[in-house]
Length: 385
Image 1: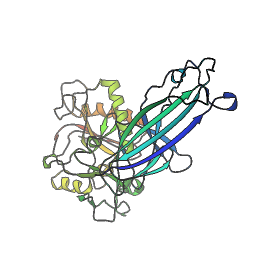
Image 2 (image 1 turned 90 degrees about the vertical axis):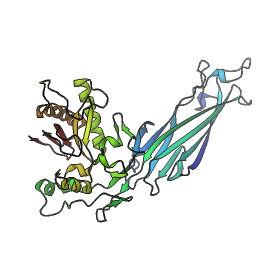
Image 3 (image 1 turned 180 degrees about the horizontal axis):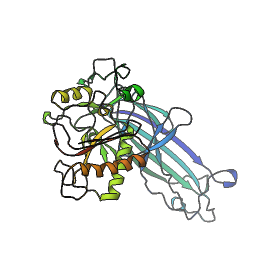
Image 4 (image 1 turned 120 degrees about the vertical axis):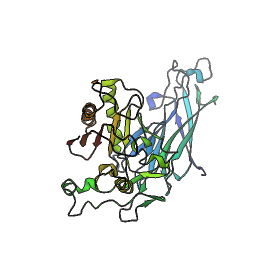
């Protein structure tokens, strides 16, 4: 896929006298040192929007119908007398002339320069992950006499981030996204819908945003302890890893990090100890599971991208660990994990359902105790022996 490129430049002249509102630099200031460029993404569309730093190790899930507005930021150079040629009898006040330029590239989509060091990026209908990168060149000269030309100093910095576009889902369509069949969502306004659905229809509206999950995107990191694949393990692992389109609630990422915090404080968890047995399940996959004798409710929260089936599995034997140290693996161990999940929901400021379950049913990990958690917005607790 070809790269798109746009460039912007800015110049600034910092003059001599502080009394006139100009910049002065003390003689004992340090020489400039290269510092990494950082990127920030704009949140909100109104005048009160804020900027959020972007972690280069984390992918950004772009909401459907939204372009990304990104700006480059970098620490100002510390410019001192060592950058200015000596001249006997001259002041320690310095005159600094700085020029900076930014060159942006994207491996897909469309770039548009919208301001000083700010670009707008549109996926332009693409569904694959895109790398957005910027290279910044800054040069300056420092002199003690404004009438003189001084030697030029240059530094270069760069930053990059991965963007994963969203794909809009048409609930009235044929259930297909990008060639993959998601299926048709149940009608939350059906007069025969279960009471929780009838009383909270907005909670059961089909997701608007889906993201492509394949071998290249499954490992994209969304947070310190989660990748895109964390929240959508293969529903039918024996069939291999084809492209799927999955819905992931941003609140699920927040909950997951809170749960890691709780388990770390209680158990000193090993890497990968928290395991997701079931995450996003499309309506089509739910129907397939049902045909295999693995029933999920028609309005199962797994279809809405905010539900997980979780175990603690430090020895990676695909079963819940003996969390209460009684020598048995049973529902009592799931009760211990449920307590961790309860605390994580509180810590994250979220409400949802917690189900303590004796036996997981699925094409993998069959028979282990586990805990279901979802972020439906109100608290519900149950136990399945």
